[in-house]
Image (cartoon, rainbow, N blue to C red; front, side, top):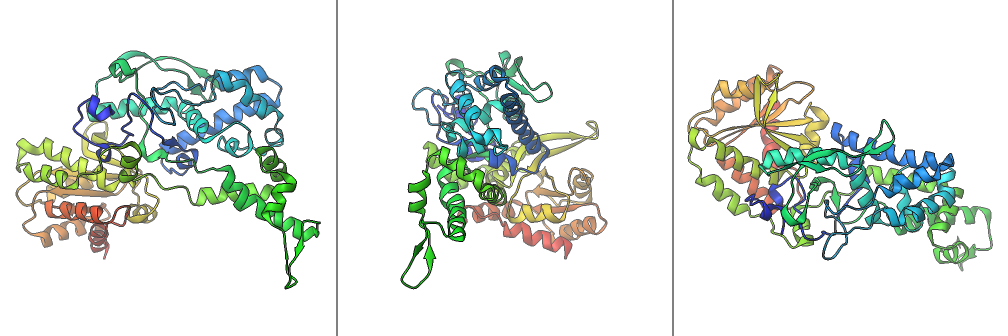
Length: 478
């Protein structure tokens, strides 16, 4: 029973911003700290700051001998089933830094030179350097530390998708970075009958496996550093080959120094550049978000039905009566084809104290492709969409309406959709005038353009170049 089926949303995973989890079990995907830190939006910065705050607080208590406080903080990370991510089979149960494991995790942190020497900087470092900490525990810990903003995200998504919520629901521990402590409160959340409360997780932030992996770090970063060190020192591990060249094998290093996490810590202390190089590599090349097709395969769900989306759009008659349905279908299509570049849609977004409204607003989280390029050259932290269910020509008022929503802080790029355009040359000239007057950049799309975007996405899974959008944008600035 997926969330979408339980609440009869009439959408599949490709048309939802959050992970459409199964309510009676978990799906084997994880919240990845590296993915979170790759976000450049204010919300991404908030999430990263919370993770850093919690981990620094725990390490500070351990270093200052306040071990019972550190254990209590770790114990509050016990998994609470409402996220439905992880390896559980059957009912959600998780493998977090919970009450049972808090003491052992604290002990590993306390005894490890990694925590006492400053080697540990981030929560994900524990996956590399602390015995007993695995990817599923990191993911559960991240979910719990970010509970506060994820509750707010859930509330926003419930409003957006018309999902009913219940008031007076126990929040669970919420991390307060100012006080350096956990707090509890009563909040408004969806409660799915016998399945209990649910906290949604953005699909943009989940991965099939965590970016940080101890085997990868050890074999491809730490061992090569150790090899260079042994060769430079001409240790007994150095072998001379027939051609006179020298080598040190990774097998010989593992046999001498070991390959468990204790060995990794000890060798990292001697070769700290290896860990820094690994961190830099992960920052520079964070793992890509899971595609719609990836998630469908993992959880046995439906892949995007592009023909169905096109049929929905074709079925709506132009005019005021169908305006709401038209806006809803455009959002479904855009959310599906522009993911993961655009995320966190908001409809009828108010600006200027409610005096102006924007039909749909997306956050630009692109890491490559067209929207990433746009973000490098033009203010576009938000992308605005105005939907006009017109069967006639779109004129200056509609163009001016969208341009009036732009600002340097919000963004200066938008998409104007309409059903048909009788004179495309004239509409293009209007959009060019807006750009030339420094009033923003408007890409106008009719139904045929939208269908072309859908076809492009269907043929090129994972491609984010959106050649039609790029062509129209280059025409604006050409």
